[in-house]
Length: 390
Image 1 (tube, one colour):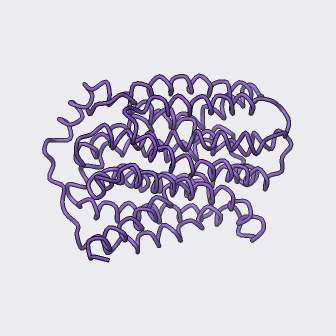
Image 2 (cartoon, one colour; image 1 turned 30 degrees about the vertical axis):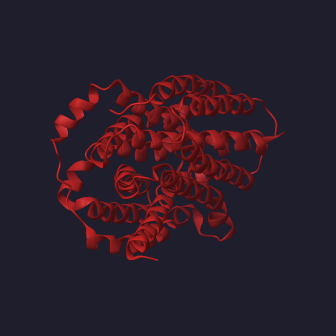
Image 3 (cartoon, rainbow, N blue to C red; image 1 turned 90 degrees about the vertical axis):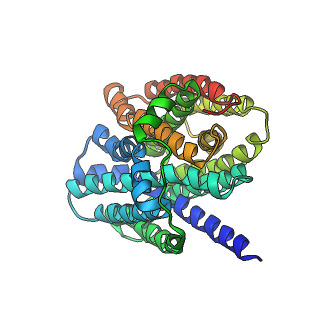
């Protein structure tokens, strides 16, 4: 194997390792909500904030990522992101409500930088394999989310770690990812911006295509983070035990891995991406409707359908960033603004969903809210699926 192929292979492994760590600090929370509520006395609205705060960090910090890559370089900024992620995840182990929320915000900041940088790296380093590599790293995002969801309760209860260490456990893997990434610093380069951040934002704000990419990112994230936060509670209300509910959330996200891997790789080959978007939304609507029916029948099938649709939608959101830009600089800029707008929208989801349930004491109404957002997702995805670049 040539040195260049070896470098690309190691880089792909590093990207996969990073992607694996960009969801556990969030997805590990949902199955533990009952324990956290019992120990802290927090309301459902505040518990929803444990997912909302890191998403809000995504939204507020994503757009500023180019400022860091200009000073620290792409590779240096990624190393910083992994360091922040590890520190924030560990901070949640410290007793008290303040460290829990502070660590959540800090970990969210690290994830925000990693989210934005990865599409640009793919665009630059793998220009002829964008769909494949996007599928691999988005699949690893789903893998990390699935494992952390399924293992949270066993780590806390079966191994006796308690919910704090069940959350902090994932710092081990983000630190390993940092060690794997460090050799990339040998090739670190500062990003020379072609235009100022303000100029980039001004130009992108005039593009309808850019807004639709951003809205699709927001609507799919809105649904995703609500589901990973509240699905275990919804399932337990249907008569399913806590451990089984955690594993069903893991199944949901595990099946989603296939969606994140398959859909971008297939959709890249099409003239436009409208049909894949429509099929994913149909699958999501059907699964949400079945989830509104009381009982435990076919629960595994329902959550699998929902997981595949969410995973495929996320893969499409990432693919849109790559396909709708002409080069890696534009990909970084579109990635920043779309994730900033998208995740700011999504940040309202978990807390809003929890608040609606607190008011109504029935899951049907907040789940009906998700059906509305499925329609909005179809509209923005249909527009973003058109050919062209921003």
